[in-house]
Length: 180
Image (tube, rainbow, N blue to C red; front, side, top):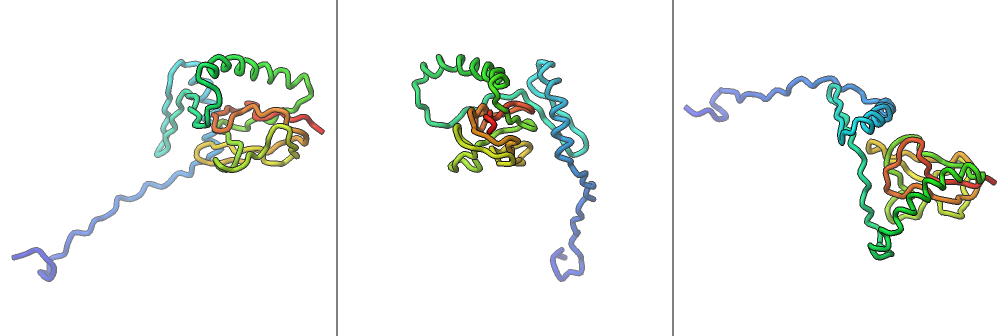
């Protein structure tokens, strides 16, 4: 006797396991959690912290400076020699901005900052260009969501502090604007 169709026997039907109810993930709460855990990760000396609740797992890793695929204009030896003064100048520039009347537009949350909507597109703002309050100055990618960053001041862009494609932290300066 065969167990095929027409023999009167029914094939077993695969039953799906009951789905667990999906818990809605509040992105704002996750970002707030990241902002609370970040200082603890830095103080702990660990490279990574993993937190899981239900089906949601959050992994925080010590940031690594991303490698830029931009064209290299200077020889490697010259770039290495100039890297330290640039970093020192950026730190000193942020302090000087307060004293010279420039207003700073800062990152509202931690993420990857982009100056243009796509890799080949023109930047939202450029040094010497005008910006108005409410104008988009860049995008901030956090948790695979792109957030428009808008200027809160009208004026002339005097300095772009954050590099496109770089990880920025909450309250880090993105651009400096001379109010008009």
